[in-house]
Image (cartoon, rainbow over all chains, first blue to last red; front, top):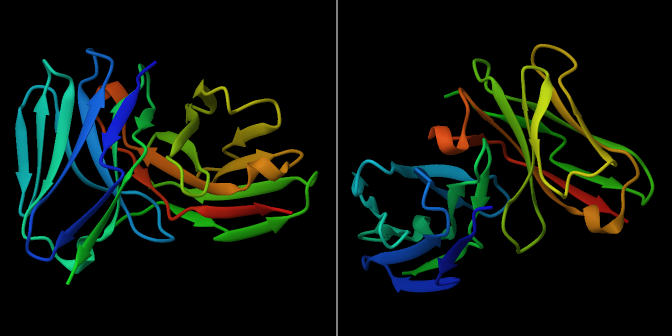
Length: 111
Length: 117
């Protein structure tokens, strides 16, 4: 099945700086890649996703880039704010209807 | 904004007891899922459900687990005889059409924290 790796496992940035989280996947047939944000005690919340027919997608301060050849995709957060502090998970499809999640990145935005 | 709701938010049970976790998916969604997250670890797929039957399950979803859609709105996960290692956050999710490779996002509930003592 699909295997998803995610780096770094923890990331601390100063408020206003950018944060980048990278994921790699193993199945070249995968065609949809969501990013989830999980705040303490809450469920994962979809923040952005990308389909394999595009290389980049942006939504305000958040962007995702996809490199199908290298099988990796990255989350970019610009102008980070304290409320961006959370655990971020990438995911990729696992053949059927479910997702395989990466191990997560704990982002801390320091004021 | 429509959301997936789960009850209870926290369940404590004794080892060997049966528990039922409840979920109300988003009303026009057709695919339903249960995922599990052991403390500090990643989210893991358990089972997907469509048209009143299981469509996929992982190796975690063994005979002690079952799912049911008893009426038009609820979706339940039953753990027959709980073990200490079942302690985790259990998330219900739903999608309007097939998720995963079909490229449709799944929306997650807030989760039920199950503690087996």
